[in-house]
Length: 117
Image 1 (cartoon, one colour):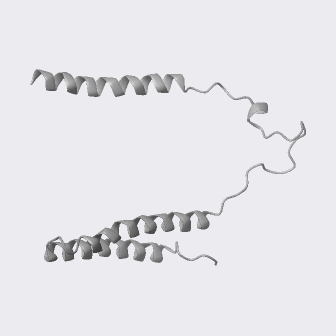
Image 2 (tube, one colour; image 1 turned 90 degrees about the vertical axis):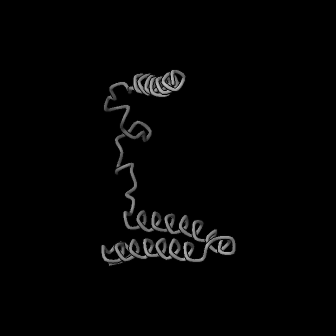
Image 3 (tube, rainbow, N blue to C red; image 1 turned 60 degrees about the horizontal axis):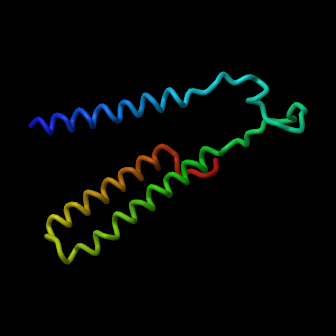
């Protein structure tokens, strides 16, 4: 019991110390206006240096990544069909697919899937 308490104290203290040290070392100095402005041969910039990002494109990319990961989770379900209980496999597969379809329906109703308006 004593060893477990020592391990618990070490596992709490060590990450806390690392986080405190990292946060104190990562403090940025006060930025002045010249250092934070974009550099264009010493002249004032003609336009904004930042290119605007389409939020719709970003949302479609995130949805693609989510569904890509979901495909990776669905493929092993077919492989374990032979070695698992059919009722448990069916219930877990249907519940997983219902969660996916409800998320897709929510995104559809929120208008995330409309590319151009």
